[in-house]
Length: 393
Ligand SMILES: Cc1cc2nc3c(=O)[nH]c(=O)nc-3n(C[C@H](O)[C@H](O)[C@H](O)COP(=O)(O)OP(=O)(O)OC[C@H]3O[C@@H](n4cnc5c(N)ncnc54)[C@H](O)[C@@H]3O)c2cc1C
Image (cartoon, rainbow, N blue to C red; front, top):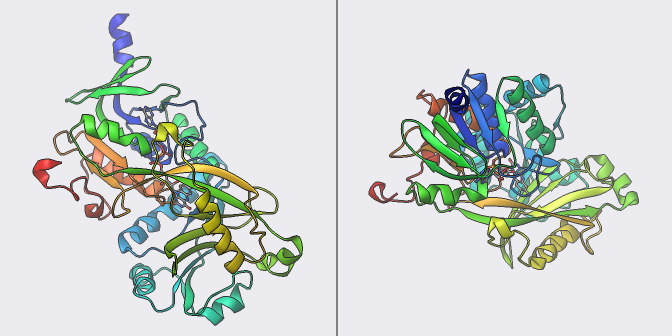
């Protein structure tokens, strides 16, 4: 009996963290035939990490062609997951990537899209105004129109991964924080309730990753910040006039007298009459005390943006405010790599506010790393040692 119980606690792979990256990794590993355990500290679903909420933007438009390459896989893999789970979570509304017209960054986006033959259009400010009258443009600003992009219904995506993972024979333990792990040929993972063993482990613990990385002597510059997710009420008359004429997802990166800022917006899909417009920045936080910080300044910055560029919205104050966490790295690229001393441990964290859409490709990359296969993607930008001398990871 005792040996049977011990055996039942052994897995090929244990994935720690059931956010979108851990869940997509667990799903992909299970699909590749591995016996997988996914462990989550909170009861599922929960709203305390980075993967909750109704919506995320998905797109091909990136400045770096290695992300475009990942999205070439991610789009069909999301579609496959929709079929497997029998749920529709992709809303194809297109994405407007607004930037200074002709800027080096705009050219990088265009070049990355061309490298992978992704359909797109470059709009100058008058073309932008004509095509999307709901969005007020300012002189010198244009956009790259990414018609294949759109909105992912995030909660449904996460649930779909977890449901199909279980159908594939995967096991989820929720409300069970991992308290420590001991590396070795067989990794021991200790939780609040049990001890599990596996040949391989994936650490996908989002803003909580630092504690595992430090315990494994890896120094990762991860910076959890709190994001205020703001919803603004659309004026019904002006919505009829403008917004009804189709509002896509928007990314807007611009320099103002107050400095550089990056705002994103999503069309009405969640709360009737409310448009989500938020700042891609926020205060540093401890993820265990996410709401203990004041960030009223963000409301003011976004209200100013809304009043100037999305005038069909009531900019007096947000109608609704929710919170979420980004785990930023200095170059805004995640860490997806094997541990230098323990190659059977993969760390996958630091998605810097843009990792949701990438999740299917991340799951694929993690599966390849775990299985010792040649990765399908350029993994150099995601190396653990890119900020530290190798001897001093
Ligand atoms: C407001 C907001 C808007 C965003 N918009 C976009 C967008 O439009 N497009 C896009 O592509 N991306 C977007 N992102 C980013 C994207 O959502 C994140 O990059 C992604 O969700 C990160 O997922 P994760 O799995 O790394 O982290 P998380 O979702 O935080 O998952 C980590 C999980 O690990 C668990 N965990 C931690 N410690 C332990 C432990 N000791 N034991 C067990 N479990 C543990 C946590 O509880 C958590 O569930 C947005 C993020 C936010 C916050």
